Each structure stands twice: as structure tokens, then as C-alpha cells.
Image (cartoon, rainbow, N blue to C red; front, side):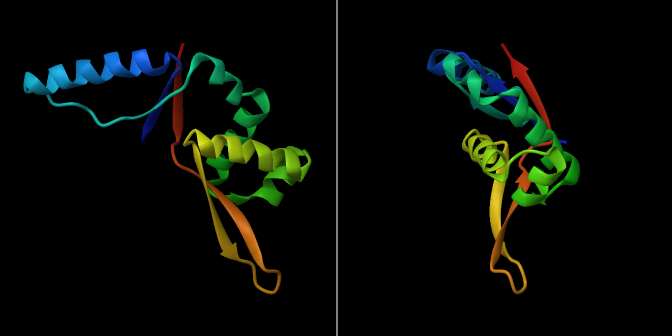
Length: 120
């Protein structure tokens, strides 16, 4: 299972982590692959309670339409769509448009990661 770490220390923290990884590589150490997202401290507002609920539901269903998410969470579709857009921008979910026989296209949301660890 892939683990995503969300850092909130901005560019300076990213620079320090990158240099430390480079030093380990220079010493010949084997690095474990990891997916990380670096946010500015003020960007933590992206992970609201509602968006965390949306992410958990997407992860549990491993692919679901925005309309189905809204129905499951008992929230307006527009609000869920905004939350999905925010989660997509930080790299936690992906949205693909698929054909919906006789009804045009439908937005399918899939998780890009299955576990998120937030370091503060």
C-alpha cells in the first residue's frame, strides 16, 4: 500500500528533505519510495473535515461518481464537486470522465493513495 506524507513546512522543508535524501544516496543507502506533497502552512485549510470524509468515501469505494458521493454523504453535489477539485489539486484523488450509456458522460473519482500521514 502506498503511503503519502503531506508536509506543511513549505519550500524550506522541501529543500532540507531533498538534501537529506541526496546525502543518503551519496552514501549508497537504499531509499524507500514514497509519495509526498508539500503544502505551505496556510494551505492546511484544504484538508477540512468534509474533504476528509469525501476522501475516505472515495478510498472505501475505490472509484465512485460525484453524484454517488453526494448521495452517500448526504451533501449537495456542488459542495462535493468543490471538495473533489480541492483534493485533486493536492494529489489525493483523480477524476476521469467516462461514458454513461444514454446520458452523456459521468465524472468518476478514484483515490491516488490509500493512506495519508500528515506531519505537522
